[in-house]
Length: 478
Image (cartoon, rainbow, N blue to C red; front, side):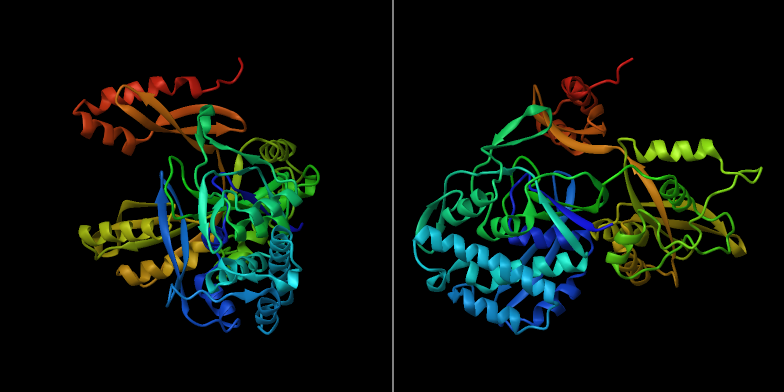
C-alpha cells in the first residue's frame, strides 16, 4: 500500500513547521542538510532542536541566515532554475517547483500582472526556499504518494510584509486556500469544547502553498504508523505545532492473511537464538514502511495451534484488535546492563535520553557475574530513533554494547484539555478509546504550579481538578 501523509493543522501550518514535523518523524537532519546542499544557496545554516510545549514533545526547525537583513527578491524562473540545476531527485524537483508555481500564480492574480513579472519577496528568500524544498525532500524520504489536510484556523489581525501591513490570512494565502476549498475556522477548539480565538498569522504563504498544491482537503481512513510534531515560534494556550500523521491508506478490512501477519509481528521469538524479531535498521523510512504489516518478515506465516491447525480464537482476537479503536505502532526497546556507573551518572544519562526523544527510561536492579549488584537500563523509543539513542548510550555510559528489540504496542488515544478550579486553569490528560473519553487525569506539573502559587495542599487541589474534569469523561454504555 502507498504511504500517505495527513496534515493535522490544528494550530496552522508553515514551511518550517512542516520540516520540523518531518524531522520529528525520523528524517535525519544530516540527510536534509546533504540534499539541500545541492541547491548551492549560500549564507545559511540549519538548526533543529527538541521542544516541549504543554507536555508534548517535537522539533523546532529554523533556517539561520548569516545576514538576516539581506533578502534577495527572486523571480519564479530564477527559483525554478535553482531547483532544476540541483542534484535532487526528480520528484522532489517537480513537487517543489509546482509549489512555487502555485504561489506565483496566486500572487499574479492578487496583483493583476502576468506570473512572469512576479518577484517573490519573503518566499523568494533563502529560508523560504529551504522550507519548501526541505519539505519536499522529507516527503520523498518517507516515499509519500498522497497528501491530505484537515480544517485550518484562519487567524486574525495583521502581518507586516514587504508591501506593508497585510490582513490575516495574507491575500496570496487566502487565494491559494480558496482554490482548493479549504475549510477555515476563526477559532481553535480544544477538548471539552473550549474555544480560543486563533489570533495572529496561523497559516503562512509557504504553508498554504504546500497544502494547496499537494493536499486533498479531507481526512482519510489511515493505518497510522507514526506522528510528528513541528513547532512554531509563538506560544499559545495549546501546543503550537503542526502534527503530521504518517501511515498507509485503508481501502478495505484486513484479510485473514493480513491478520496472521500481524499476529507474527506482535510476538517476539520464543527461541533466544532466533533474531528474526530483532532489527537494527538505520533508515527510519524502511522501518515505517515495513513493520505495521510485517511484509518483510520471513516468519510471516500462519501460527499453528497444538493440534497443527489454525487457532481460530487467536485469529478472531487479532481481527478484533485490528478493527478496534486502539492505536497501534511499532516501538523499540533498547537495553544494557551497567555494573560500574555511579547514581549521578545514571541520573544524567536518563536526563539526556529523555531530552533527546526517548519515550521512557527506567532502571531495574539486577545481579551480574562475580556477584556484582548492577542496573539494567531500559529505553523505550521510536524505531526511527533507535540507532541515534543507542549511540548516545554508548557515549554517555560505561557499556560496550546495547541490545535492541522491536515490538508492537496498542495504545489508547490521548488529548489535553483545560479545566477551571478556584485557583485558575489546570491541564488534564484525556484517555480516549475511539471517540469515547474513558478517563480524565490532572497533570502533575499543572497542579504542582497551583499548589506553589496558592500554598494550598497538593492533594486538595488535585481532587478539585479531578472533580472539575469529571464532565469530560464519557462512560461506556452499560
